[in-house]
Image (cartoon, rainbow, N blue to C red; front, side, top):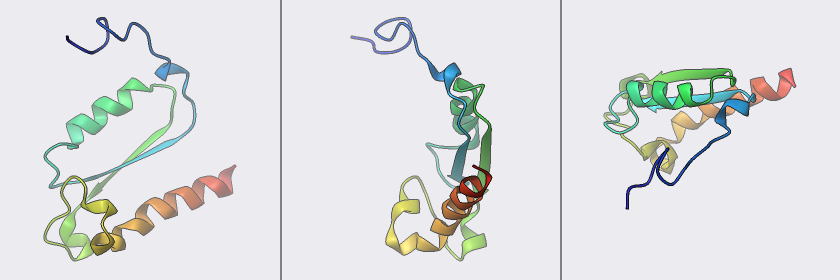
Length: 92
């Protein structure tokens, strides 16, 4: 069975989302690359989205990959998201 828009998902409400969103991606991530992130952002056209590229060497890492952002060994990356969240909480 094929799953997707027009087959099992007939409607979505992503265009109603208006909250800001933050998309950080690792430049060495083969899955969540810039093209895929931009595609995801287009799904919610009324949400102000910010995209940030994370270059491993800028943070002293040889790699980040797809899931390493969440690893405690990559915790130098966490302030990237926290800073964005703090900025948004000050705006609200």
